[in-house]
Image (cartoon, rainbow, N blue to C red; front, side, top):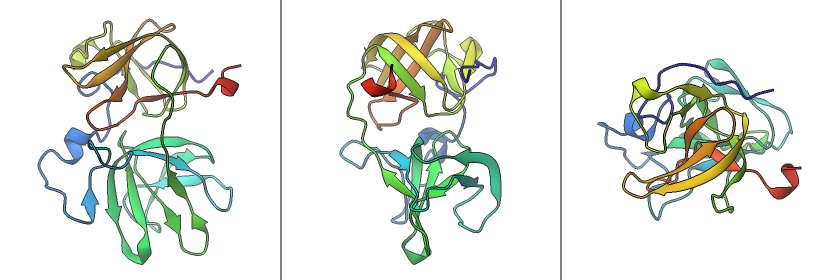
Length: 205
């Protein structure tokens, strides 16, 4: 019921939001503001795993007490961070790669909120969960231009990938969808950024 392609335009044939090229295209990051997932660096994937077991409202900026946006994460949700920014009190702020806002790794008085996650499955045909909101669908295995995007997939959509292609010349792993028809990016092999993550066998039943 969550698979709902939206006929909208996006960025670079992958999907809209605060991608790596947008966040770090001009401003050079300093020690407290760095991109994640570069080769040899930490994984840009995080899992929301709060100490209190409650959902969380995404913040508009890197501030625990800042404005909340109309996006909620629930325990177990996985997301990709395009930026990690060190804040006061040992709090690490995490910018969602799809541009919807910020989360943080811990909260004083509560404890751990988000933990770094590693995707162990090798990309292959199977069931995937979209972890980048508005992941773009294109007609072919190539990235394509913005005007070639035929739809988008919402965060949390469950899709079946029937073919996986490694596009080494553009640093992408691409997957062909069973329904709706088309292709999506699964992973940026240069940065580790992901648009979708393969579901464990027990979740595919």
